[in-house]
Amino acid sequence: MLSEGRLLVLPSVSWSRDEYRALGVPFDKRGRILDEQLEIWSLVWKGAPVSYEGRFFRFRDVYVEPRAYRPDGPRLFFGGEGMPDHLVRRLVRYGHGYNPLGRPSAGDLDRLSSALRAAGRDLSELELVGGTRGVFPSGDSCASLPQALESIPEQVAAGFTTFCIKPSQFIDDPDGVPQFCREVIRRVDALTS
Image 1 (cartoon, rainbow, N blue to C red):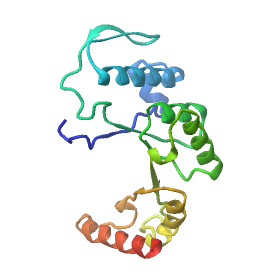
Image 2 (cartoon, helix red, strand yellow):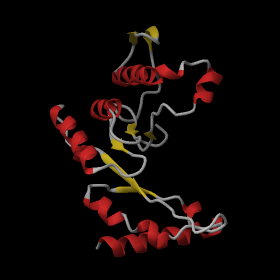
Image 3 (cartoon, one colour):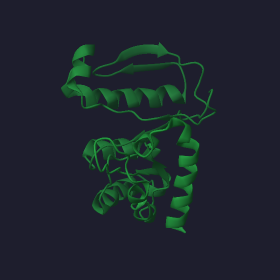
């Protein structure tokens, strides 16, 4: 409500066994737990009261107030490495955006596109989030921005429209972030026009 629908949620299962051990949650069930949570979210965003009987969660007559700004809840972005079945399933059923780790192959994007079409959706309905990879010449130097941005045109051609760039990889001075952002935009405009 506060962001007027601009909130993006990136539900994830983490790779750290220590986090799950600290919370007393079985690591090997984390994906199934997330799937139930996603199902519950979709129910409570549609209306209330909601009752649910699952393997991990059970409740009756639950209300969630205040309601989400969007009738179907916040935008859900999913990501990960590769295109495993569980990622495809979550993107098709709940996804508004795809934020991969690294760069997905053309085959991965084709697989996702086919699964979306089979469900009556289209890849263009997902916001595709690309990124850059900083290469550091030494342990105490910043990465080269021009080198990192070289992959942007290829990602744009593949349909990626939003990009995550970490200023701390390229500059050491926090006061320089505004100028850095202007430089990124200038360089990307030059690469993609």
